[in-house]
Length: 302
Image (spheres, rainbow, N blue to C red):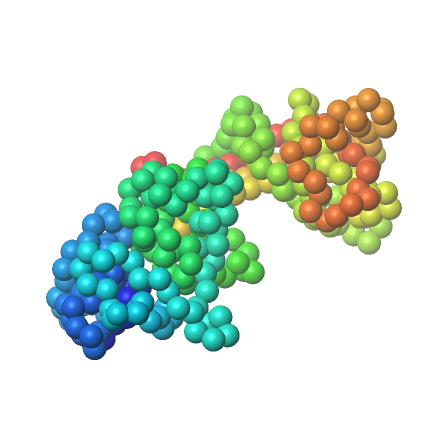
């Protein structure tokens, strides 16, 4: 077995093949990269000396070189990476999402690492390299950054949600009105379903919650504008692929265009986000909620 600084060491169960523990190799004791290694474990942030057994293997996210003077020895800290030509070594989806969530909160790497109970060096590595941190590490990071596991996951982002495994014993329950309104108010993108001359369509829109329903912006003459004067359905949901859980809220009501200048001005002043589809969406459409229902899937013992 040979390894480089920054490689990931994975210890698997000899029975199931699932990862039992993983960590970052932060120290080498032999110039040729053979064991033993100093490993900083992702679940505790602690560094221990490891002689890998047959259930361990090394994953090389990219080839890196040690700084001048040779490989790092125990206690010398984290070696700065040297990226290969062509940018083969670059941050993965997990790293980019971690960095973005941390910067939104104005937290440093050291502050985030302390909240997540891990080493700053390991968090810095996650942000700058392709990596697959353990579930325990991701859960602590999600909690520290006020986000979710699924939002921190990298890869397969072009696939629709729901690629994870279903719970062994799921529990499906209906949500009451208060729960529906609370969940509806946490999201900024939903889907409006309406009938057009070409048939039924379902369209994603940015939306805002108002006292008796919700509003969204579009441009006159577009497909969403056809909702005006019609009975429509609006749906928003959240799926956590990692945990196999999720919820959805459905609003049914009549859509009307907002024409009062004062109301339009207030909506524009208090809107939490601009339409993702771009400028020119000056038509506000109000869906007055006649019916609101929702469902949530959790573990049976949750």
